[in-house]
Amino acid sequence: MLSKTINKNRILSSYSTLMVLSVLYVVLLFTSSRVNIYLFTAISILFFIYTILFFDDERIANKINRVSESGTFNKLNNKNSKVYFRILFLLLTILVLIFQGQYLNFETIDADIHTYLLVGNDVLRGSLPYENEWDDKGPILYLFYALLIFLSGKNLIIFKIFCDILFLIITYLIAKIIFFLSNKEITSKPLIGSVFFIFLMSSPWGTNEYSEIFCIFFISASLYLLLKSDFQRNATFMAGILYGFSTLTNQGSGIFIILFIYFFFNFLKLKNFPPFLAGLAFVHSVILYLYLSRDLLDIYISTLFFIPLKYSQQSFNFISEFVVFLRETFEYSAFSYSIILFLVVITIFKIIKDGFNSTNIFIILALMLSILFFYLGSTGYKHHLIFMLFFLCILVISTNISSKKYTWVLCFLLIGFFITLGPSATNNSFHNLTNLNKIYSGYPLKELASEIDNSFDDTFKIFSLDHNLILFYLDIQNQSFIIHPTNYTEAAIVGELERIGRISNNELPYQISRKPDVVICSPAIRFLLTEVNCEVTDFFTGYNKIETYDYFKDESRTYYKDPYRLIDLYIKSN
Image 1 (spheres, rainbow, N blue to C red):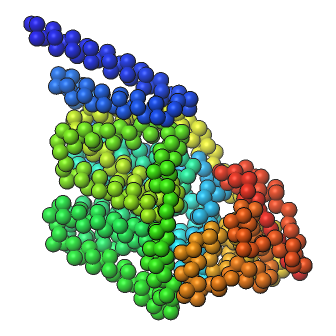
Image 2 (cartoon, one colour; image 1 turned 30 degrees about the vertical axis):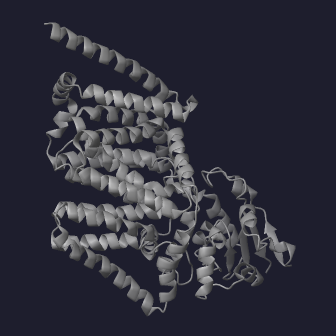
Image 3 (tube, one colour; image 1 turned 180 degrees about the vertical axis):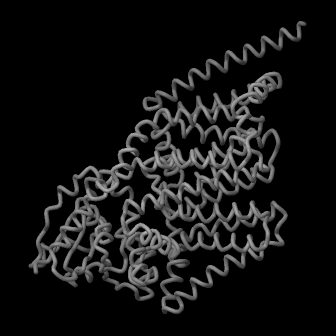
């Protein structure tokens, strides 16, 4: 009797402590805009640790499991897997529409996408990537871009929606991968992992046109195919082809070959690894042959190997940039930041309690390689962490440390995210998706492109050092070989392209000296590229500087209102 009383008092005491921490934590969650990130992190970790210890109490665990076994999730778990994934796909579709559609009214989120569009457009003219216009990503990215540009009828807003569909497929593949790695158990984990990825990528920088998204599409499809087929030889060959596409989309994804080697080793399928390598080699051989047949082997090798190797040797403050990412995630949504903390804490507890197993080694290795990708990128751009976010969502598998109990914690955080950010996102998306034609016709750079086109009766040439989206609308090549202006500041890039004779050693002044019909620039680029003065009216006659401020100040031009990216436009008089 005394023992039961002591146990009851201990449970009540633990419950009271947890309630106090819970209230404090929830208050911090909903007032995070006024809370220091370090204080929030400390309180959150303390709360999560105590929650795990509380739930791991045997008597409490039994009671919570009894509640879980009679709850909604258990009813869902008993459904047929096909029905479960159909419902899940519908939910994911709605969430992608809500959280990605909210930004369709902005013509530009990241100007890097403009350069991908230009190269993709050039592919539709019959050229190979790097043949006339150069950017530093793999050729498959531009071939895929060309396909989507063609399917969208060169309509930018439809192109964005196609990229959102690609993102939707990735979220569904996350759910499927979690399902297979969880021994095909129908639990809430596939739902949580896939929904969390949508929420992580819902911030303004999380545009779905980045090369990393296309890489993840191929990698996730490859992993899914291997798991679904149980590493059958034909499927393994196809999985190798898919991974080969990834390595030719963004060269840095080649580091994930280590992950695939472990994947085969973990499932005792190393004997089927040669077909995977054969598929990988097949893709590279076909693309290599294409470039060899066009006498473009030099630029192909330089872009895929020499430039990335030189580029990765640059230094940046890795820790500082990673902390900036975490801080911005916290500022965007304390709920997303909390889920990241919770998954990390619970994984550590699982390893301490049960040791390493093949699944958590796989995910931890994937996360380490993802962070290595960020480090090798040498710039600190947030989109270099998309691989990490992808594998972080698969980390929900680690929540099986104590049956289903932690599902409720994660669901609370996901619901909190939707409550705080969902209503405004839903309203914006509904407005955007029901006014696509109006929004597209009102994109300011599209209107400016029409004004430029109306200034000429015949064909004309453009030298653009900024706002390259104008060239996409006009369906015109940039006069320069390098089309992303900041690449001119990278010694590794400029030096290599000079070495193989693709550009001159005085490239920028040379392009200006050719007196193109149109010159597009900005104060920000003039500050970066001091070796050239793109304000051609200073030294050439016959040019008019066009007033573009109305286009620049248009709220729909870009999400990030950079005051130094004014549109400097010069047109040669006829």
